Amino acid sequence: MVFYAFLTFYIVVCLLLLVVVLLQQGKGGDIAAAFGGSSSQAAFGARAGASVLTRATTILGVLFMLGSLALAVMGNSGGFGSSVVGGIGAPPAAAVPGTPVAPTDSLPLAPAGNPTVTPPATPPATPPTGGRTGGGGGQ
Image (cartoon, rainbow, N blue to C red; front, side, top):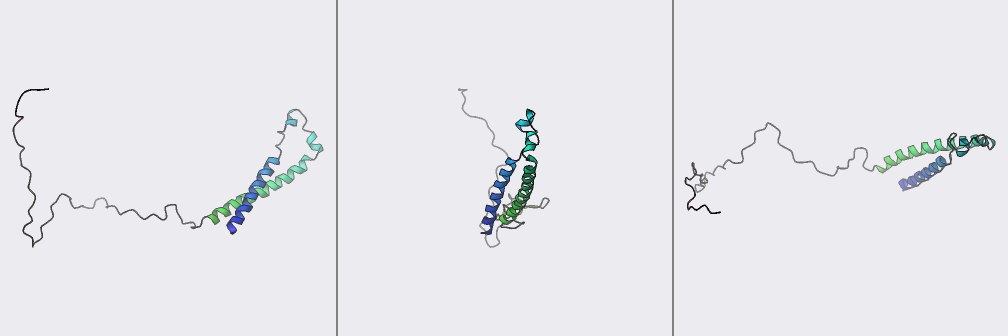
């Protein structure tokens, strides 16, 4: 509840800061200064209005910065140690380089009480000889 009240206050500060900045007049950048009529501004007291707008901009700017920091801290519900991937488990442990690994092509040893286990047949030592039979160089 406090978060939403502070968020509403922060939005109002942002809108007021926008209006105050847009109301400010540039230093000699108006259209009257381009045609030599910049002295007319002094007759209406533009200098006094500029100091009020400058002070309002400073105050609203400080409120804007402090409000953004406060909303960031309030919105961080997990604390400073939270992470986007905080709920994901650790990956499986990998083998340390240099550690000997048992070969996968070795045969398992037969248990002592089971004499019927025989090793698989080995392939012939030499490849069969002979070529193609039948002739005829067909296409």
